[in-house]
Image: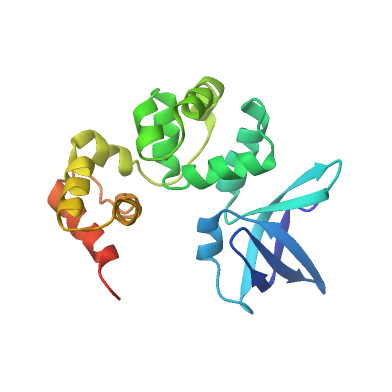
Length: 205
């Protein structure tokens, strides 16, 4: 079983990468966020690996930039009913907006946060809560709950409204706001602070 690969990034597309290690090129599926975090073609990269064996397609490799990501992927596959590798990777892609926030949303039955911020359907969010509520307390995550804190304080909704007033498209504004929310400082945060960080992400480079 392959557990870890370190080598040269040969190519990448929207859902996979080819990593050369020991003269062999391994095709590995990743979340879009993980692929975006990887370097350009020719750079050194490394990934934790999970395997999935299909009756028709052989063995597929799924890659993760941290052991934490791989552990959550495996938890989705093992604990959530009718969840194969591809669906588990889709769930992980949404949860990666903030693993600490995702963990607390599940533990605290925060269906609204899972739907509105993480992008799960209501049916899927209910399924995740039912399957993971008593398993997530033992799942270790690094970092703080930044998105949930901003959401609960009302800052998230205020900033989203302000961005709409400024003329930003809903999808673009939400993506920038979600990213800015993961960088929140410790302690209480108001809408003005969150708006400033979001606008930096929306400003031309």
